[in-house]
Length: 261
View 1: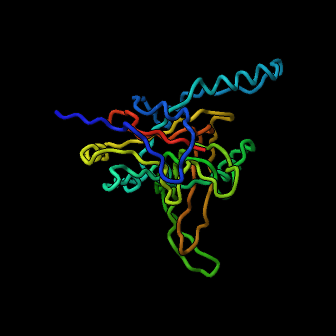
View 2: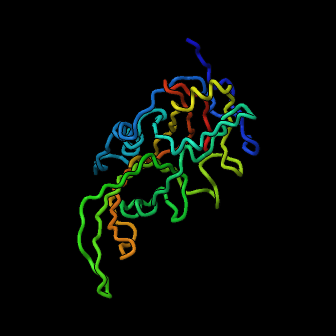
C-alpha cells in the first residue's frame, strides 16, 4: 500500500509572515485532542475563599484548578471550502474561516454570568465557537399590539466556546491572515491532497486562565410577527489563551499549526 507523507513544509501566505513560535513544534507530531466537554471536566471547581484562608493561599488554589499545560480541544471544521487546494501552487490555501466562522454573544454571556474580568466587547472578540446547536422545545400562541397572531417557537441554543479577550485594536482577528483570510499554505502533491482532504481535522491549543469557566443562560433576540422565535441561550465558555490552530490528518498527526495573535 502506498503511504503518503503529509505536511513536510508549512508556507506562510503572502502578507502573513511571522516569527517561529511554539506552535511550530506541533507540526509532524501526533496529538490527542479532547472534546470541549472533556476539557471543561478537567478543570476542578474551586470552593469560595474561607475566612481563615489567606488571599495568597486562595489564589494558589485558583491557579491549581486550571491544571498544568495547554489543552488541545477538537472541533469540526467550519466548511471544506475553506481548505482549498490550489493545483497551480501545489498547496492547500488554509483560510481562517476553517477554524472559526460562527459568532456568539460573549458580552451577553458575561453580563448574565456577572463576570467583569476579563471584559468582553459588544462588537467583536478574540474567541472561537466550538459548537452551537438549536433545539425547538415547544410552541405557544402570541399576538402583538395590533392584534396580529402567530405561533411562536421556543428554541434553546446550546453554545460552547473558548474566549480569550477583547481585541487590542479595532479589526484585530484571532489569526494572522492576509487580505483573503488565508492563514497559510500547506504544500502537498495532488495525490497527497486528494487523500488528505476528506479526513482533515482541526483542533485548538488553549491554556485556561481565570475565571476558567463561565456559564450563563439568557434570552437573546426579539420575538416578533416576522421572527416568531423565543430564543434562550445556554452558554458554556472556557476562558483561555488561544495559542494555535492545528490542522491534522485522520490519525491526529499535525500537518500544520497556525499561530494566533
